[in-house]
Image (cartoon, rainbow, N blue to C red):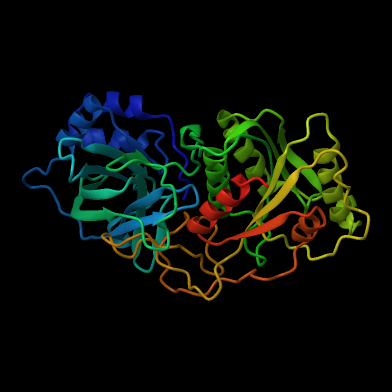
Length: 436
């Protein structure tokens, strides 16, 4: 399911008041909302509340609603949501889809309700057994919330559910600097734009981030949507919390032995181009010359490090970021460039799937504390990150595997920092901040 936000708030708001509720639902289903939820402004939310009120004689759908409790992600944001189950037997191929209207009210600020509108087309939803499953999520800051969510289909059938959500840091994640303030509600975005107001008070640094764009699981070659969200989340956390005077970002692919993105003066607004470059790797063919050079990735990695050390403006701190590389080769002696006069500190923030932890249902309770969300082996790459999976399995672990980037960083007298949870990432950021 595509969770990218579409710029359609104005279009939907204008159409909401043009006609009566039955045509409104049809028009909203035709609007380019994709599967995202958008926050409505006061005028739009007033009209939407009116159109989603229950009328006498309306048909209540046979459905079930599963509240999805809060999970702290690698961008240090709590993600929560809902899952509607509706029978496939109620719909034909002509069904245009469903619209979900959600009201979220902080219980400590009862007058401050946020209204979200989400749309799912028939092609967006997942078929599980006899049901369609309609998924939506949002970000919450710490606090207690009342949530009411109403689904309508193109025949004006409706389903409504109310529940409560408690968002608080668990003992394991108590040291994570949560991005949103208490009682805050934000529309979900698969990619979070870095907000540099969260930076810590450590001494500033000239930073290079070398992002390894590869699949998280050694059993996968294609970078999945969930991989992209995880790595972009960790990247966002780094930029938000490391104090910098300048940031260079290089995205590279060892599999293709090339850089796919470079910015010597990276700004938060550049993250869109960065994500597009990573996403393009899904459909990019590997050049035959790469396949004919089995150790080409070693030379490429050495060259990447050389450009960092010998470029015109070397950073004082360079951070490799990404999952464990599938390449286990040791680097031949003398191939990694020497530090010379650069004196750059190197780190490798390396994501590993937690060992022995099964794939958890995303937010299995609506009132629980944050949980770490693993991924099931062989999950459908079209599913959103954290999508509930009925048959759970232990994901493959990369813990302790040899890794060529670890070997290179060791040659450079740097540190490899293993990240499995948001708390691990917060500790890694603190380690990078400490200068000798």
